[in-house]
Length: 334
Image (cartoon, rainbow, N blue to C red):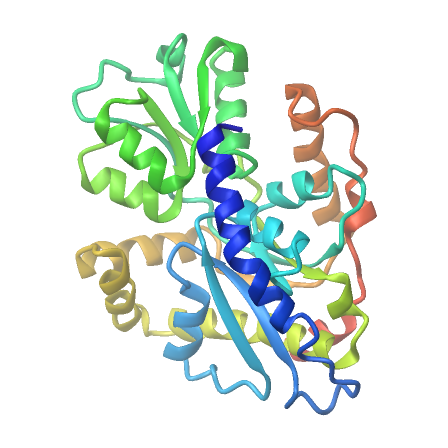
């Protein structure tokens, strides 16, 4: 990890820790039927799309309080959970792997959200002579460490007959990577979501995609203290179920209206935002479900790849930080 990335992560956590100290004992309700005293501190990546879609679908009237915090990636959300600054995090399969790598996680994966794998790409600046992944040999390639970008870049290099050591890999946060790409500091950038959308708007060209590499499993992780409280468990399950229902609401004839919400936040033309949302929901409708053996096996495959890469020092048994404690509540809420 670069010094800049470390400084950025440390600064983010430094800002969050006082908040964690102030709120860490909040939301201590004992009864699952009384959620009025529960406060969930929930992470979001990109532009708080979960909060926005709940409001759009009129499902934000929760009987508990939700404090949303925005992060540039799921890796930062898991760091915040480890620091006690978040109760619930949403991420790809990768961040929990690294957050648990020291063998002392204070969280568990409690639900799986199936979602599209679009806008997960390796891009190069306009006019670049790089036309495919094989051309990256010897090039400076930025990537968002410990995220989907890290994983699909590794797999794309392998498919092209290259090793990780064949590139000059630069770990960067999404916004920093975008700036470096535009400023000539890197030759290519592996990232996701809003940063990729923005890069393309600025003329970047896609040379590789994680679309067919990633599983489409996005994980909900919760602090162990949340799982110990019946009320917090119920609130967490209810929130995850509401997000699934909100996406279903938008899919049933409201894509054009919700596209205006997306476009305003991501600074896209409305038609483009609507197309990207429709494409994503066609590829994989966003919906959540309980923990199952197949989801655990999928993440184990990812963890094993990082072990081979050398990013993990030793084999990690991922089922050690998965929990079915939310399954019953989530099935009821769904």
